[in-house]
Image (tube, rainbow, N blue to C red; front, side, top):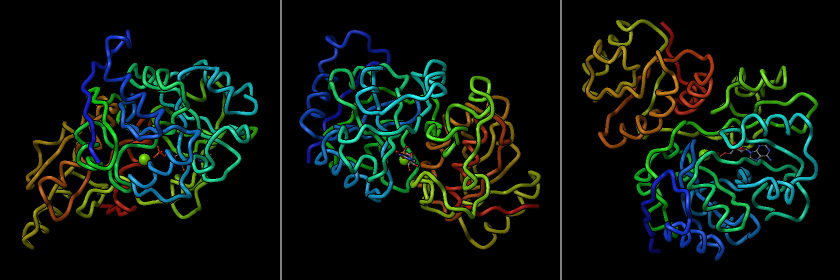
Length: 347
Ligand code: AMP
Ligand code: MG
């Protein structure tokens, strides 16, 4: 199929000056799927009320059917259309973090969404993105928009329109290019259907930030302790993986260099993902530094592009430094561990 490409300013204010967004919204209303930027990663949007539209998302991505989608909204009234009631704690969190990278799991109002969106669950994941293009597009479509990350299932999420093109060109109706996304890792998924909310997936809003608003929150054991079954269906799948095997290494720079040297001596082309502070300390075939230890948010923004670069240069193996798990570091390490299939070498 023809994939339209629309380039827009990320700070779009008056939608009337953006016929590209209006055209994209029309395609959504016609049950076509369209990729668009959010502040976390690019999303692959579809009319959340239409089984036909939602099916196209699963097909384009090759996403397993039991992995529910996040519904993106642009207003409070859209929220009330699709959820039963809003617990006071959820209300406080929306006031504090919406629009923003926080997804809340709430009880669904039956019959308001295509069943495939929630994979048959009686709950729904909802968020209001903090990105002018995303919100204008949702508003112009007049629809709740189901949108997982706009990548082929299993690959790193897209943080540039180019990443979406690499994965989905010819398979979707269009891509709205609003430049690089900001946060770079996906939203935090928080289950608000229990008395004490549970983080199902760490993301753009940190545990510490949540706790300053509502007090203690729990964490799904599955992402803390790797051998338990996760409550968010999608968390059990391999994800974010570059083509070459990725191995995390917890150890000093010299230890990591020694591993690189050993693999190169065996004739392998070795990639390394390291903090920008350490980049100059290493010698490897391809080194990417997504960001700085002094500002972990820069590592988050650059992480998926870094992982995708290794595919372009065809390395045989990739080693990665580990990053501190505080704040956004928890989401960074969650994604890196998944990308590595939990493979870690400790010195
Ligand atoms: P993605 O669409 O790739 O950002 O992933 C969305 C994440 O939210 C996946 O891990 C889903 O399994 C999870 N999720 C979506 N809806 C629900 C729900 N109703 N209950 C629990 N987890 C959900
Ligand atoms: Mg995803």
